[in-house]
Length: 169
Image 1 (spheres, rainbow, N blue to C red):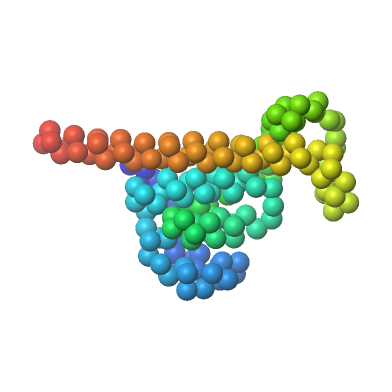
Image 2 (image 1 turned 90 degrees about the horizontal axis):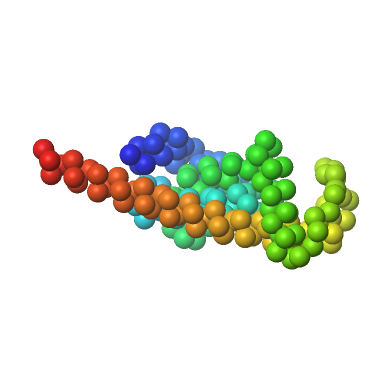
C-alpha cells in the first residue's frame, strides 16, 4: 500500500534529473538506487525530507537531494517532502520551533513582528535566532525520526498483510 501511494505522487526521475537546480549533481543522479522505492530507501527518504523541511534556508530541495545522494535514499520523496514548509505552513512551523527553542534555552518568548528584509534577519540572529535555530534542529530530528519509524512500520505491516493474504488463498 505505501509503495503505490508514494509512487502515485512521485515525480519521474527524468524530471528531477533535468531540474535546473539539481543538474549540479551530474552523473551522481544516474545511480538507480536513488530512484528505487523500496523498504530501505523510502523510510530514509522520509527522514531526510522531513529533517530538511525544518531547516530555515532557501533551496531546501537542493539540500534534500544532496543528502539523499549521500545516504543513498530516494531523491523524489526527499525533495517532495521539503514542500511541507511552504508559505502557508511556514509561519506556524517556525513559530512553534521558536517557542520550543525558547523554552529549552530558558528564555521567555519575545514579542516580534516579522519583516521580509535582510536587516531584520541580521538583527534577529542575536535576539530570537538561537532559540529559533535550536527549535528547528530539535523538531527536525524529532520529525525525521518519526517519519522514518512510521514509514518503516507501514512498509513492514504492508508486507506482512500481503503474506497473510497469500497464505489464506
